[in-house]
Length: 179
Image (cartoon, rainbow, N blue to C red; front, side, top):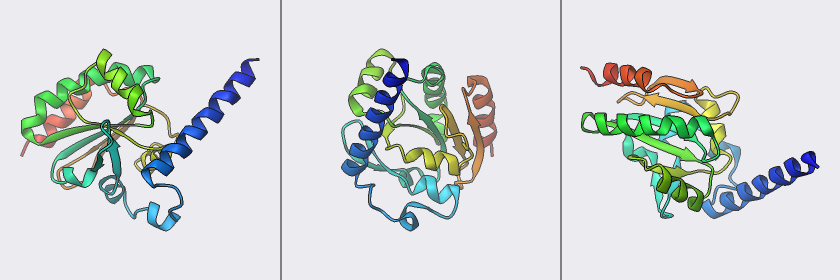
């Protein structure tokens, strides 16, 4: 009985991924168009949707220190680290730091999550293929949470699989914002 539930859940996730992929126009693209040369090009080449269904390109954050967090509403460690990320976003906003949360959940689940735990940075929606992008950044296990930090030039400064301690990320951001 347990195995049947697991297979049913996996099938539902696969169907959701296909539906989201078609909705975003991501399915049917060749591997050549989906793969970019470097992690920096890969992150700034992403075009995702926000919670209102608007298209958002991460290229709008070029020149900022960018903290990209891959997460999901069902991921307990993800949920634990997000209040700290919000505090750091508020602390470093005026110093050119931008946090972005990328999830494969659908908008209603994320909106419901935000009612319980408000977040001070944009939450964007990707399809299951977004995990390939995280793998390009060092998340070879394609697990959650995963956080990548880019300096102002777009160079990958740090990547961490698992919960990112607020104090550790605070120190890294202090180093990156200092001249």
